[in-house]
Length: 279
Length: 279
Image 1 (cartoon, each protein chain N blue to C red):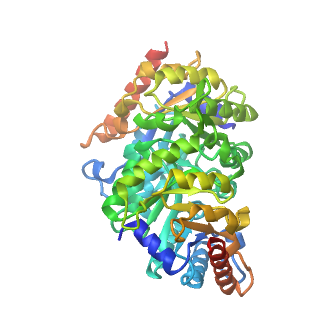
Image 2 (cartoon, each protein chain N blue to C red):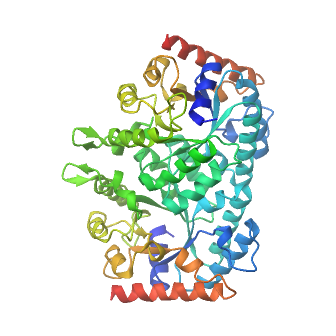
C-alpha cells in the first residue's frame, strides 16, 4: 500500500501518536541489562505496550549507532519486531548525501525487503539528495520525511534566514510540495512528508498551507515542550495529515517495574489529548 | 594532538590526499568475496596501498549501512585498521540532529576511545546540532567537517539562496568561522572544518577568505570532475589548510588483479597533480 495511505489508515484506526524509540542504556528500567541486548528487550516491551494506541514507532538511529554494530543489529531487529506487531516503522536517521551515496542510503533503509517504512531526510544538498529516496518511495511503497522546520531552539539560524519576502524553510516547503505532488496516494497525501517541530506552532500553521499534500511528522511533543494545542495546526479537518512523535515522555514514563504499563498509559493519554484538541 | 595540527602535520609529511573508502560490493575486484567480509579485505588492501601517500581515509557510512549490521562491523574494523597504519580517519556520515540526540552521535563517533578522528556534520539544525560535536572535539582531540558548499549539481537549491547581499552558504561560513576560532590548534587551524566541493572553485576561493581558520575537506575530485586547478584555492600558501578527497578514481582504478598497485599509483598521481598546482 502507498505509504501515505497506510499512514492515514493507521492514524484513523489507532491515533496519530508516533512513539520515538530512543533508548539510552543508562535510562533503561530496573531489571533490564544495560547493553544492546537490554535495549532490544526494552524496545519489544514498549512496542507491545503501545501497539494498540500508536500508529507507528520511530527508532532514532543515533542511539543504536552509539552501541556500535551490536546496536545496529538491535536496530534492525527492533524494526522487524515492530513491523510484525502491525506498526509502521520510521527510521530517524536524517540521512543526506550526494546522488550516488544517497542511492546507498536509500537501498539501506528503503529497499524492497526492508521492514522500515520511511526514513527522515536532511535537505541541505537539494534535490540530488532527495530523488534517490523518492525513487524507492515510488517503487517500494516507502516514505520519507524531509526536515523543513526542526523543533530545536537554534533551528532558525539557517532555516529562518530571510530570502526575499520569505525565509529558507518556506522556500524549501514549496520545493517539498512540488516533489510531493509527484507521489500522491488515494488519501491525497504524498509519500514525501515533512518534519515540522511542535515547538513552532505559528510556522506550522503557515507550512500546512504551503504543503497541502505533505504529511507532517511533528517532533517536540512532551519533553521538548510541544502541546496538543501546538500540534493541531499540522492536521487537516478530518484529523489526518500528521503524526506526532513523543519519545522520553512515553518510553521513560517510569523506570520502575511498571514501565510497560506507564508507557501504555502515557501513549493513551497523549492520543486522548490530541483527539480533544482536534475536536 | 589537536586534530587540525595532526592533519596539518600529515599533509606536510605525506600529501593532502584523502582516500574515500566507499566500497560497492558489485565493484569489488575479481577474487574478492562480494559481501561484508570482502569489503574488509578490500579496504585493508587499499589502506596498505595508499598509506604512504595519503594523509587520511574517509569511509562513507552509507556503503557500510547498506550491508546492515555486518557492514557496520566492517566499518569499525576498517577505521581501526586505518588508524593502526598511521592514517587519520574521517567518518563521512553527515550526521545531524537536535542537541540530546546529537550527543549520542558525538559519543558514537568522537568518543575518547574511538579510532575515528573526525566526522562530517550537516548544519541544517544550527548550533544545537554542532555544539555537542564541538565539545568532543575539545575534550577528545577530535574534529568535524561541517557541510558548507557541497560538490553536487543541486547544492545551490538551498545553499545558494540569496540572503541580503550574500547567499545561505556564505552566511553559514561566517557562523562556522566563529565556531572555529573557539578551537584553534598550534597550526592556527581549528578542529572545526568545512566541506567545500571541488566542483565550485569560485565559491571555494571566496570561502577561503571567509573561513581563514577552517580546514577544508574538498570532495568532488576525479570522478565528479574536480581538478587540481580547481582545488588549489582551498589551500593557504604553505600548502596546508585543505585535504582533497577522491574515492572512485583511486579505489576503483582497476578491477583486475593489479587493484592495489593501481590504487597506489592513482593516489600518487593525484598527490603529484595537487603538488604541481600548488607551486
